[in-house]
Image 1 (cartoon, rainbow, N blue to C red):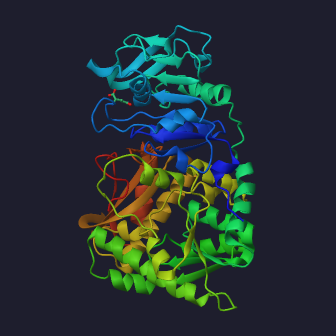
Image 2 (cartoon, rainbow, N blue to C red):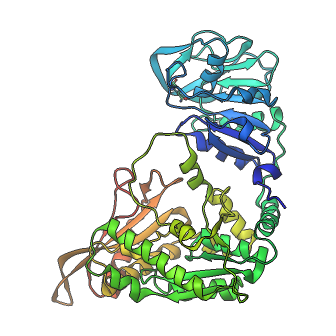
Length: 524
Ligand code: GLN
Protein backbone atom coordinates (compact mmCIF):
# COMPACT_ATOMS: atom_id res chain seq x y z
CA UNK A 1 0.00 0.00 0.00
CA UNK A 2 1.38 3.41 -0.79
CA UNK A 3 1.87 5.88 2.03
CA UNK A 4 0.04 9.15 1.57
CA UNK A 5 1.83 12.39 2.25
CA UNK A 6 0.13 15.07 4.33
CA UNK A 7 -0.11 17.19 1.19
CA UNK A 8 -2.12 14.44 -0.47
CA UNK A 9 -4.63 14.23 2.37
CA UNK A 10 -5.14 17.93 3.16
CA UNK A 11 -5.65 20.63 0.54
CA UNK A 12 -2.29 22.36 0.35
CA UNK A 13 -1.10 25.80 -0.63
CA UNK A 14 2.34 25.59 -2.16
CA UNK A 15 4.77 28.34 -1.14
CA UNK A 16 7.69 28.57 -3.56
CA UNK A 17 10.68 30.07 -1.78
CA UNK A 18 12.88 32.56 -3.58
CA UNK A 19 15.09 33.01 -0.52
CA UNK A 20 13.36 35.76 1.45
CA UNK A 21 13.97 35.76 5.19
CA UNK A 22 10.16 35.87 5.57
CA UNK A 23 9.21 32.89 3.35
CA UNK A 24 8.55 30.49 6.21
CA UNK A 25 6.18 33.06 7.74
CA UNK A 26 3.83 32.71 4.76
CA UNK A 27 3.46 29.01 5.58
CA UNK A 28 3.14 29.84 9.26
CA UNK A 29 0.29 32.33 8.73
CA UNK A 30 -1.72 29.98 6.52
CA UNK A 31 -1.43 27.23 9.13
CA UNK A 32 -2.70 29.67 11.74
CA UNK A 33 -6.04 29.72 10.02
CA UNK A 34 -6.10 25.96 9.60
CA UNK A 35 -4.93 25.71 6.03
CA UNK A 36 -2.12 23.32 5.32
CA UNK A 37 0.76 24.96 3.46
CA UNK A 38 4.11 23.62 2.44
CA UNK A 39 7.22 25.44 1.31
CA UNK A 40 9.46 24.18 -1.47
CA UNK A 41 12.43 25.84 -3.19
CA UNK A 42 11.60 28.05 -6.18
CA UNK A 43 13.46 25.58 -8.38
CA UNK A 44 10.79 22.91 -7.76
CA UNK A 45 9.61 21.31 -11.03
CA UNK A 46 5.85 20.99 -11.09
CA UNK A 47 5.97 17.65 -12.89
CA UNK A 48 7.86 16.19 -9.91
CA UNK A 49 5.11 17.04 -7.42
CA UNK A 50 3.09 14.04 -6.29
CA UNK A 51 0.15 16.26 -5.29
CA UNK A 52 -1.75 19.15 -6.78
CA UNK A 53 -1.61 22.42 -4.87
CA UNK A 54 -4.83 24.36 -4.15
CA UNK A 55 -2.97 27.60 -4.79
CA UNK A 56 0.59 28.81 -5.24
CA UNK A 57 2.42 31.68 -3.52
CA UNK A 58 5.70 33.00 -4.91
CA UNK A 59 7.73 34.44 -2.03
CA UNK A 60 10.05 37.41 -1.86
CA UNK A 61 13.76 37.05 -2.41
CA UNK A 62 17.06 38.95 -2.33
CA UNK A 63 17.72 38.74 -6.08
CA UNK A 64 16.69 40.97 -8.98
CA UNK A 65 14.52 39.25 -11.59
CA UNK A 66 16.42 40.95 -14.43
CA UNK A 67 19.83 39.65 -13.29
CA UNK A 68 21.41 36.98 -15.43
CA UNK A 69 21.55 34.35 -12.71
CA UNK A 70 18.20 35.25 -11.07
CA UNK A 71 16.00 32.30 -10.07
CA UNK A 72 12.81 31.81 -12.08
CA UNK A 73 9.67 29.82 -11.46
CA UNK A 74 8.76 26.73 -13.49
CA UNK A 75 6.26 28.13 -16.04
CA UNK A 76 4.17 24.98 -15.51
CA UNK A 77 2.88 26.68 -12.33
CA UNK A 78 0.57 28.69 -14.56
CA UNK A 79 -0.79 25.55 -16.23
CA UNK A 80 -1.93 24.10 -12.92
CA UNK A 81 -5.01 26.25 -13.30
CA UNK A 82 -4.98 27.34 -9.63
CA UNK A 83 -4.69 30.85 -8.15
CA UNK A 84 -1.20 32.34 -7.89
CA UNK A 85 -0.03 35.14 -5.58
CA UNK A 86 3.35 36.80 -6.04
CA UNK A 87 4.83 38.65 -3.08
CA UNK A 88 7.54 41.28 -3.73
CA UNK A 89 10.14 39.31 -5.75
CA UNK A 90 7.21 37.00 -6.55
CA UNK A 91 5.28 39.90 -8.07
CA UNK A 92 8.36 41.13 -9.92
CA UNK A 93 8.66 37.61 -11.32
CA UNK A 94 5.05 37.78 -12.56
CA UNK A 95 5.89 41.09 -14.23
CA UNK A 96 9.13 39.73 -15.68
CA UNK A 97 7.30 36.81 -17.28
CA UNK A 98 4.70 39.18 -18.72
CA UNK A 99 6.64 41.96 -20.41
CA UNK A 100 9.95 42.25 -18.50
CA UNK A 101 9.13 45.73 -17.14
CA UNK A 102 11.17 45.54 -13.93
CA UNK A 103 14.14 47.75 -13.09
CA UNK A 104 16.18 49.12 -10.23
CA UNK A 105 14.28 51.90 -8.39
CA UNK A 106 15.90 55.30 -7.63
CA UNK A 107 15.89 54.40 -3.96
CA UNK A 108 15.18 51.45 -1.80
CA UNK A 109 11.80 51.40 -0.07
CA UNK A 110 12.01 49.85 3.36
CA UNK A 111 9.41 50.21 6.09
CA UNK A 112 5.74 51.07 6.49
CA UNK A 113 3.48 52.48 3.82
CA UNK A 114 -0.28 52.91 3.52
CA UNK A 115 -2.37 50.78 1.22
CA UNK A 116 -4.86 52.45 -1.09
CA UNK A 117 -7.23 50.03 -2.80
CA UNK A 118 -8.35 51.37 -6.16
CA UNK A 119 -10.46 48.37 -7.17
CA UNK A 120 -12.74 47.45 -4.24
CA UNK A 121 -14.20 44.57 -6.23
CA UNK A 122 -10.87 42.70 -6.06
CA UNK A 123 -11.46 39.79 -3.62
CA UNK A 124 -7.84 39.84 -2.44
CA UNK A 125 -8.31 43.24 -0.79
CA UNK A 126 -11.54 42.54 1.10
CA UNK A 127 -11.48 44.51 4.40
CA UNK A 128 -7.88 45.67 4.16
CA UNK A 129 -8.05 49.16 2.62
CA UNK A 130 -6.02 51.99 4.22
CA UNK A 131 -4.06 49.58 6.40
CA UNK A 132 -0.32 49.79 6.99
CA UNK A 133 1.76 47.52 4.79
CA UNK A 134 5.45 46.63 5.09
CA UNK A 135 7.78 47.31 2.17
CA UNK A 136 11.24 45.92 1.58
CA UNK A 137 12.45 46.29 -1.98
CA UNK A 138 14.91 48.09 -4.25
CA UNK A 139 13.51 47.03 -7.63
CA UNK A 140 10.16 48.11 -9.00
CA UNK A 141 7.67 47.57 -11.80
CA UNK A 142 8.09 50.31 -14.42
CA UNK A 143 4.92 49.40 -16.31
CA UNK A 144 1.89 47.23 -15.83
CA UNK A 145 2.60 43.66 -16.95
CA UNK A 146 0.69 42.44 -20.03
CA UNK A 147 -2.82 41.34 -19.14
CA UNK A 148 -2.77 42.85 -15.64
CA UNK A 149 -4.57 45.78 -13.97
CA UNK A 150 -3.73 47.91 -10.93
CA UNK A 151 -5.86 47.08 -7.90
CA UNK A 152 -3.97 48.93 -5.17
CA UNK A 153 -1.40 51.69 -4.83
CA UNK A 154 0.64 53.10 -1.96
CA UNK A 155 2.45 56.40 -1.38
CA UNK A 156 5.49 55.27 -3.35
CA UNK A 157 4.23 52.33 -5.36
CA UNK A 158 1.81 52.92 -8.23
CA UNK A 159 1.81 49.10 -8.65
CA UNK A 160 1.38 48.11 -5.02
CA UNK A 161 -1.21 45.45 -5.87
CA UNK A 162 -1.91 44.04 -9.33
CA UNK A 163 -4.34 41.43 -10.64
CA UNK A 164 -4.65 39.59 -13.92
CA UNK A 165 -7.60 40.77 -16.05
CA UNK A 166 -9.15 37.32 -16.39
CA UNK A 167 -7.19 34.77 -14.33
CA UNK A 168 -6.83 34.52 -10.53
CA UNK A 169 -3.22 35.75 -10.54
CA UNK A 170 -2.22 38.53 -8.13
CA UNK A 171 0.89 40.42 -7.16
CA UNK A 172 1.79 42.45 -4.06
CA UNK A 173 4.77 44.76 -3.72
CA UNK A 174 4.69 44.53 0.10
CA UNK A 175 4.97 41.63 2.55
CA UNK A 176 1.57 40.55 3.96
CA UNK A 177 3.25 37.76 5.96
CA UNK A 178 5.05 40.06 8.43
CA UNK A 179 3.19 41.36 11.46
CA UNK A 180 4.11 44.97 10.54
CA UNK A 181 1.56 44.65 7.70
CA UNK A 182 -1.45 45.33 9.92
CA UNK A 183 -4.00 43.37 7.91
CA UNK A 184 -1.59 41.06 6.13
CA UNK A 185 -3.17 38.02 7.72
CA UNK A 186 -6.59 38.98 6.34
CA UNK A 187 -5.06 39.39 2.94
CA UNK A 188 -3.53 35.92 3.00
CA UNK A 189 -6.80 34.53 4.28
CA UNK A 190 -8.67 36.26 1.44
CA UNK A 191 -6.30 34.60 -1.01
CA UNK A 192 -6.41 31.12 0.52
CA UNK A 193 -10.05 30.89 1.60
CA UNK A 194 -11.95 33.11 -0.84
CA UNK A 195 -9.80 32.85 -3.95
CA UNK A 196 -8.24 29.37 -3.67
CA UNK A 197 -11.33 28.02 -1.87
CA UNK A 198 -9.06 26.05 0.45
CA UNK A 199 -10.90 24.13 3.16
CA UNK A 200 -9.85 25.11 6.69
CA UNK A 201 -9.40 21.54 7.83
CA UNK A 202 -5.79 21.56 9.05
CA UNK A 203 -6.25 20.82 12.75
CA UNK A 204 -4.24 18.58 15.05
CA UNK A 205 -7.44 16.60 15.72
CA UNK A 206 -7.54 15.70 12.02
CA UNK A 207 -3.79 15.26 11.84
CA UNK A 208 -3.68 12.61 14.60
CA UNK A 209 -5.95 10.27 12.67
CA UNK A 210 -4.24 10.66 9.32
CA UNK A 211 -0.80 10.39 10.89
CA UNK A 212 -1.59 7.24 12.88
CA UNK A 213 -2.97 5.67 9.72
CA UNK A 214 0.12 6.79 7.81
CA UNK A 215 2.48 5.32 10.42
CA UNK A 216 0.59 2.00 10.39
CA UNK A 217 0.80 1.75 6.62
CA UNK A 218 4.45 2.71 6.56
CA UNK A 219 5.54 0.32 9.32
CA UNK A 220 3.27 -2.55 8.31
CA UNK A 221 1.81 -5.23 10.58
CA UNK A 222 4.99 -6.68 12.08
CA UNK A 223 8.01 -4.36 11.81
CA UNK A 224 9.51 -2.76 14.90
CA UNK A 225 10.59 0.83 15.46
CA UNK A 226 13.19 2.25 17.77
CA UNK A 227 13.65 5.84 18.89
CA UNK A 228 15.45 8.01 21.40
CA UNK A 229 13.58 10.11 23.91
CA UNK A 230 15.17 12.97 25.80
CA UNK A 231 12.45 14.16 28.15
CA UNK A 232 11.77 17.09 25.84
CA UNK A 233 8.55 17.99 24.05
CA UNK A 234 9.32 16.77 20.52
CA UNK A 235 10.66 13.32 21.32
CA UNK A 236 7.89 12.69 23.86
CA UNK A 237 5.15 13.68 21.41
CA UNK A 238 6.72 11.59 18.66
CA UNK A 239 7.06 8.61 21.02
CA UNK A 240 3.47 8.88 22.23
CA UNK A 241 2.18 9.10 18.67
CA UNK A 242 4.16 5.97 17.73
CA UNK A 243 2.80 4.16 20.78
CA UNK A 244 -0.75 5.08 19.77
CA UNK A 245 -0.06 3.75 16.29
CA UNK A 246 1.84 0.51 16.92
CA UNK A 247 1.88 -0.04 20.71
CA UNK A 248 4.87 -1.93 22.10
CA UNK A 249 6.38 -2.49 18.66
CA UNK A 250 7.77 0.96 19.30
CA UNK A 251 10.78 0.86 21.62
CA UNK A 252 11.91 4.10 23.21
CA UNK A 253 15.40 4.43 24.64
CA UNK A 254 16.54 7.15 26.94
CA UNK A 255 20.26 7.50 27.42
CA UNK A 256 21.26 9.05 30.72
CA UNK A 257 24.44 10.78 29.61
CA UNK A 258 25.33 12.12 33.04
CA UNK A 259 24.67 15.70 31.97
CA UNK A 260 20.87 15.73 32.24
CA UNK A 261 18.94 18.02 34.55
CA UNK A 262 18.52 17.15 38.24
CA UNK A 263 16.39 13.98 38.72
CA UNK A 264 15.64 13.95 35.00
CA UNK A 265 15.99 10.22 34.32
CA UNK A 266 13.63 9.32 37.18
CA UNK A 267 11.11 11.93 36.08
CA UNK A 268 11.11 10.74 32.48
CA UNK A 269 10.64 7.15 33.66
CA UNK A 270 7.69 8.19 35.78
CA UNK A 271 6.06 10.31 33.07
CA UNK A 272 6.62 8.08 30.06
CA UNK A 273 6.34 4.56 31.44
CA UNK A 274 3.79 4.97 34.21
CA UNK A 275 1.94 7.96 32.79
CA UNK A 276 2.03 7.60 29.03
CA UNK A 277 2.48 3.81 28.80
CA UNK A 278 5.41 4.15 26.44
CA UNK A 279 7.63 1.07 26.06
CA UNK A 280 10.76 2.77 27.40
CA UNK A 281 14.19 1.57 28.49
CA UNK A 282 16.37 4.01 30.44
CA UNK A 283 20.10 3.33 30.15
CA UNK A 284 22.48 4.81 32.69
CA UNK A 285 25.61 5.57 30.69
CA UNK A 286 26.71 8.55 32.75
CA UNK A 287 30.10 7.12 33.64
CA UNK A 288 30.88 6.38 30.03
CA UNK A 289 30.08 9.96 28.97
CA UNK A 290 31.76 11.68 31.89
CA UNK A 291 34.92 9.60 31.53
CA UNK A 292 35.20 10.61 27.89
CA UNK A 293 34.64 14.26 28.75
CA UNK A 294 37.53 14.27 31.21
CA UNK A 295 39.99 17.07 30.44
CA UNK A 296 37.96 18.42 27.50
CA UNK A 297 37.22 22.15 27.54
CA UNK A 298 36.52 22.98 23.89
CA UNK A 299 32.74 23.33 23.31
CA UNK A 300 32.76 21.80 19.83
CA UNK A 301 34.77 18.83 21.14
CA UNK A 302 32.29 18.36 23.97
CA UNK A 303 29.42 18.33 21.50
CA UNK A 304 31.17 15.81 19.26
CA UNK A 305 32.08 13.48 22.13
CA UNK A 306 28.52 13.52 23.42
CA UNK A 307 27.05 13.00 19.94
CA UNK A 308 29.37 10.08 19.13
CA UNK A 309 29.06 8.42 22.52
CA UNK A 310 25.31 8.73 22.22
CA UNK A 311 25.31 6.87 18.92
CA UNK A 312 27.54 4.19 20.38
CA UNK A 313 25.38 3.63 23.48
CA UNK A 314 22.16 3.77 21.50
CA UNK A 315 23.36 1.14 19.05
CA UNK A 316 24.46 -1.14 21.86
CA UNK A 317 21.06 -0.87 23.54
CA UNK A 318 19.19 -1.31 20.28
CA UNK A 319 21.04 -4.59 19.79
CA UNK A 320 19.63 -5.81 23.12
CA UNK A 321 16.03 -5.12 22.24
CA UNK A 322 16.07 -6.89 18.90
CA UNK A 323 12.70 -8.48 18.14
CA UNK A 324 12.30 -12.02 19.55
CA UNK A 325 11.98 -13.65 16.15
CA UNK A 326 15.56 -12.60 15.43
CA UNK A 327 14.65 -10.10 12.71
CA UNK A 328 16.16 -6.65 12.70
CA UNK A 329 14.53 -3.46 13.82
CA UNK A 330 13.54 -1.68 10.67
CA UNK A 331 12.81 1.94 11.54
CA UNK A 332 14.30 4.76 13.52
CA UNK A 333 11.96 7.42 14.88
CA UNK A 334 13.18 10.99 14.79
CA UNK A 335 11.37 14.05 16.11
CA UNK A 336 12.36 16.36 13.24
CA UNK A 337 10.13 19.46 13.06
CA UNK A 338 9.15 21.59 10.09
CA UNK A 339 11.57 24.45 10.83
CA UNK A 340 14.46 21.95 10.41
CA UNK A 341 12.99 20.87 7.09
CA UNK A 342 12.59 24.49 6.00
CA UNK A 343 16.15 25.18 7.05
CA UNK A 344 17.40 22.37 4.83
CA UNK A 345 15.28 23.12 1.76
CA UNK A 346 15.15 26.91 1.74
CA UNK A 347 16.68 28.59 -1.27
CA UNK A 348 20.06 30.00 -0.22
CA UNK A 349 23.76 29.71 -0.68
CA UNK A 350 25.83 27.63 1.70
CA UNK A 351 25.60 29.10 5.17
CA UNK A 352 28.23 28.79 7.84
CA UNK A 353 27.84 26.31 10.65
CA UNK A 354 27.77 28.26 13.88
CA UNK A 355 27.25 25.25 16.12
CA UNK A 356 27.05 21.58 15.27
CA UNK A 357 23.59 20.21 15.97
CA UNK A 358 23.07 17.10 18.00
CA UNK A 359 21.37 14.46 15.90
CA UNK A 360 21.17 10.76 15.37
CA UNK A 361 21.90 10.85 11.65
CA UNK A 362 24.85 8.46 11.96
CA UNK A 363 22.55 5.74 13.28
CA UNK A 364 20.78 5.40 9.97
CA UNK A 365 23.87 4.30 8.09
CA UNK A 366 25.39 2.19 10.83
CA UNK A 367 22.24 0.27 11.70
CA UNK A 368 20.67 0.21 8.23
CA UNK A 369 17.49 1.77 9.55
CA UNK A 370 14.77 3.61 7.69
CA UNK A 371 13.79 6.98 9.05
CA UNK A 372 10.30 7.72 10.34
CA UNK A 373 9.54 11.37 11.15
CA UNK A 374 5.91 11.90 12.17
CA UNK A 375 6.40 15.56 13.17
CA UNK A 376 8.20 16.56 10.00
CA UNK A 377 5.35 18.73 8.79
CA UNK A 378 4.69 20.49 12.10
CA UNK A 379 5.70 23.79 13.65
CA UNK A 380 6.51 23.81 17.38
CA UNK A 381 3.15 25.17 18.51
CA UNK A 382 1.41 22.51 16.44
CA UNK A 383 3.53 19.85 18.16
CA UNK A 384 2.54 21.25 21.54
CA UNK A 385 -1.12 21.24 20.63
CA UNK A 386 -0.76 17.66 19.39
CA UNK A 387 0.96 16.73 22.67
CA UNK A 388 -1.96 18.06 24.68
CA UNK A 389 -4.43 16.11 22.52
CA UNK A 390 -2.36 12.98 23.16
CA UNK A 391 -2.70 13.49 26.91
CA UNK A 392 0.89 14.53 27.64
CA UNK A 393 1.03 16.57 30.89
CA UNK A 394 0.86 20.34 30.42
CA UNK A 395 4.20 21.07 32.10
CA UNK A 396 5.98 18.66 29.78
CA UNK A 397 4.27 19.99 26.67
CA UNK A 398 5.26 23.56 27.52
CA UNK A 399 8.77 22.73 28.69
CA UNK A 400 11.64 24.97 27.57
CA UNK A 401 14.00 23.41 25.05
CA UNK A 402 17.11 21.68 26.38
CA UNK A 403 20.23 21.11 24.28
CA UNK A 404 21.34 17.59 23.32
CA UNK A 405 24.79 18.00 24.95
CA UNK A 406 22.91 19.13 28.07
CA UNK A 407 24.65 20.55 31.08
CA UNK A 408 28.04 19.74 29.50
CA UNK A 409 27.74 22.99 27.54
CA UNK A 410 26.41 24.83 30.59
CA UNK A 411 29.46 23.92 32.62
CA UNK A 412 32.05 26.11 30.96
CA UNK A 413 35.49 24.57 30.87
CA UNK A 414 36.04 21.01 32.04
CA UNK A 415 32.97 18.89 32.80
CA UNK A 416 33.43 16.91 36.00
CA UNK A 417 30.82 15.17 38.16
CA UNK A 418 31.23 17.87 40.82
CA UNK A 419 30.82 20.71 38.33
CA UNK A 420 27.73 19.10 36.80
CA UNK A 421 26.22 18.72 40.26
CA UNK A 422 26.74 22.43 41.02
CA UNK A 423 25.23 23.56 37.71
CA UNK A 424 22.33 21.15 38.12
CA UNK A 425 21.40 22.29 41.59
CA UNK A 426 21.61 25.97 40.68
CA UNK A 427 19.49 25.38 37.59
CA UNK A 428 16.91 23.47 39.61
CA UNK A 429 16.51 26.30 42.12
CA UNK A 430 16.34 28.91 39.35
CA UNK A 431 13.63 27.06 37.40
CA UNK A 432 11.70 26.29 40.58
CA UNK A 433 11.63 29.99 41.46
CA UNK A 434 10.61 30.94 37.90
CA UNK A 435 7.68 28.53 38.12
CA UNK A 436 6.72 29.78 41.59
CA UNK A 437 6.73 33.37 40.31
CA UNK A 438 4.41 32.35 37.46
CA UNK A 439 6.93 33.46 34.83
CA UNK A 440 7.79 30.13 33.19
CA UNK A 441 5.45 30.47 30.23
CA UNK A 442 6.49 34.05 29.49
CA UNK A 443 10.09 32.91 29.04
CA UNK A 444 11.22 30.93 26.00
CA UNK A 445 14.24 29.37 27.65
CA UNK A 446 15.95 29.76 31.02
CA UNK A 447 18.94 28.00 32.55
CA UNK A 448 21.94 28.38 34.83
CA UNK A 449 25.55 28.17 33.66
CA UNK A 450 28.58 27.45 35.78
CA UNK A 451 31.56 29.69 35.07
CA UNK A 452 34.91 28.21 36.03
CA UNK A 453 36.28 31.38 37.58
CA UNK A 454 36.82 31.87 41.25
CA UNK A 455 35.64 34.88 43.10
CA UNK A 456 36.06 36.01 46.66
CA UNK A 457 33.08 36.16 48.98
CA UNK A 458 32.27 36.17 52.65
CA UNK A 459 29.88 33.80 54.41
CA UNK A 460 29.43 33.61 58.17
CA UNK A 461 32.49 35.81 58.67
CA UNK A 462 34.55 33.35 56.65
CA UNK A 463 36.31 34.21 53.46
CA UNK A 464 35.04 32.10 50.57
CA UNK A 465 36.73 31.61 47.25
CA UNK A 466 34.28 29.88 44.93
CA UNK A 467 32.80 29.83 41.46
CA UNK A 468 30.21 31.94 39.66
CA UNK A 469 26.75 30.99 38.39
CA UNK A 470 25.39 32.96 35.43
CA UNK A 471 21.64 32.93 34.93
CA UNK A 472 20.16 33.27 31.47
CA UNK A 473 16.53 33.77 30.41
CA UNK A 474 15.40 34.79 26.96
CA UNK A 475 12.26 35.71 25.09
CA UNK A 476 12.01 34.81 21.43
CA UNK A 477 9.53 33.65 18.84
CA UNK A 478 11.90 31.69 16.64
CA UNK A 479 15.24 31.36 18.53
CA UNK A 480 16.93 33.10 15.57
CA UNK A 481 16.95 36.35 17.48
CA UNK A 482 16.28 36.69 21.19
CA UNK A 483 16.18 39.26 23.96
CA UNK A 484 16.94 38.75 27.64
CA UNK A 485 13.98 38.57 29.99
CA UNK A 486 13.42 41.59 32.27
CA UNK A 487 13.00 39.90 35.66
CA UNK A 488 11.76 41.97 38.60
CA UNK A 489 14.74 42.86 40.84
CA UNK A 490 13.13 41.14 43.80
CA UNK A 491 13.04 37.91 41.86
CA UNK A 492 16.75 38.06 41.00
CA UNK A 493 17.58 38.91 44.60
CA UNK A 494 15.73 35.87 45.87
CA UNK A 495 17.22 33.44 43.35
CA UNK A 496 20.76 34.72 43.96
CA UNK A 497 20.37 34.34 47.72
CA UNK A 498 18.99 30.82 47.43
CA UNK A 499 21.71 29.65 45.05
CA UNK A 500 24.58 30.97 47.14
CA UNK A 501 23.04 29.58 50.32
CA UNK A 502 21.99 26.20 49.04
CA UNK A 503 24.62 25.25 46.48
CA UNK A 504 28.08 24.49 47.81
CA UNK A 505 30.84 25.83 45.61
CA UNK A 506 29.07 29.00 44.44
CA UNK A 507 30.15 32.40 45.74
CA UNK A 508 28.42 34.71 43.30
CA UNK A 509 25.46 34.91 40.89
CA UNK A 510 25.18 37.13 37.81
CA UNK A 511 22.42 37.68 35.26
CA UNK A 512 23.24 37.60 31.54
CA UNK A 513 21.91 40.71 29.77
CA UNK A 514 23.09 39.99 26.23
CA UNK A 515 20.69 39.57 23.34
CA UNK A 516 21.04 37.21 20.38
CA UNK A 517 22.78 38.38 18.24
CA UNK A 518 25.53 39.17 19.20
CA UNK A 519 25.41 36.38 21.81
CA UNK A 520 23.86 32.94 21.28
CA UNK A 521 21.24 31.46 23.59
CA UNK A 522 23.58 28.90 25.15
CA UNK A 523 27.00 29.96 26.41
CA UNK A 524 28.90 27.27 24.51
N1 GLN B 1 15.20 41.82 -4.55
C1 GLN B 1 13.95 42.43 -4.91
C2 GLN B 1 13.96 43.94 -4.66
O1 GLN B 1 14.87 44.45 -4.05
C3 GLN B 1 12.81 41.79 -4.12
C4 GLN B 1 12.86 42.09 -2.66
C5 GLN B 1 11.91 41.26 -1.87
O2 GLN B 1 11.36 40.28 -2.35
N2 GLN B 1 11.76 41.60 -0.58
O3 GLN B 1 13.05 44.60 -5.07
